Image (tube, rainbow, N blue to C red; front, side):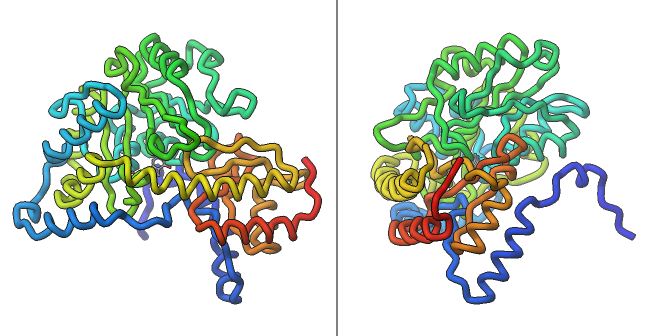
Amino acid sequence: MVEVAKRMSTIAPYLFADIERKIDEAKAAGVDIISLGIGDPDLPTPASIIDELARTAYDAHNHQYPSSQGMPAFREAVARFYQRRFGAEINAKSEICTLIGSKEGIANIHYCFVDSGDLVLVPDPAYPVYATATRLAGGECYYLPLKAANGFLPDLEAIPAAVADKAKLLWLNYPNNPTGAVCDLAFLRKAVDFARAHDILLCFDSAYSEMTYDGYIAPSVMQIEGAKDVAIEFGSCSKPFNMTGWRIGFAVGNPVAVQTLAKYKSNVDSGAFQAVQYAAIAGLEQPEPIVAASRAKYAARRDILVGGLRDMGWQLEYPRATFYVWAPVPRGFSSASFAEFLLDKAGVIVTPGNGYGAEGEGYFRATLTVEERRMAEAMQRIKQALGKVEF
Ligand SMILES: *Cc1c(COP(=O)(O)O)cnc(C)c1O
């Protein structure tokens, strides 16, 4: 008999398995499903980026093993991006590591800094990788509740000193998945001070830094003086350049953290395909026209989705970033029963909030990754199915 390692049992069973089965059944029965469930851009990768892949893919130099830390040219492009976008000086040699998608680095950083029994401070709700990678590395999560009343920011002062002193990593992600919340520089300054006071590596997930609306501009933790003493930031080409399938991202910041991650990676992977790195450079050097087009599309869809929910009685703000809308379920529903209701009665898929942590119970997440016409249709169907909404 094959025996699965015990650590695999520390990962929760797939929460959406049940809803996935129902989606398959509905599709098989010919139901027209509108999915607001998946956080994956529906827009294509821009031609300028694909052209660069095509050009460099023919160069035999790029057919060999890349370096695990990434090509100097890619790292230099990331450094220039940080200089232009955030006014932050990042050393391309020692403070940047190329990633095979930021998820890769987000997971692997735990193996670099978390020993058996160590604590990791993980927001709840959150992108699930922080908690699962903590457990796979043998660590334990201490959850930081994100409450609507606090703008979905964690209350760092509420963390007991004994917990903070024992913690190795603090995870923060703004603009935030799944809540769509944003933070300001003052909050990041507090987080850097907190990390310094307790010898914690602050891990900042900035996957949505460019997906912002209404003139809002997202900050980087690298804008805070002294951030590189205590922080590493994970960036991604997936969301800004519609490149989720290409697998390319980067880590920047504290040189010990970056180089430890590169050392770990040199033992478990062999870096990102160089032609993909060249393609991503094309995006990083000229991000504005690409992200401006996506922002306009997502903002228009957001207005239909949030406007529709507000019409039905939801009291919701328009999120200023990400492509997520995080909303409470109506009275009488749980997260799971509301998602099931929308699937059965409206053919609309949303993600139950409890999939992102216990604090997500009572919420659902809807994404902006369907075109306006379909979004309007989804809202019409939900209105028809729900009737009068109470909270
Ligand atoms: C999408 C996403 C990522 C990972 O993106 P990659 O494709 O691996 O670069 C990281 N963090 C959050 C919060 C995300 O939503």
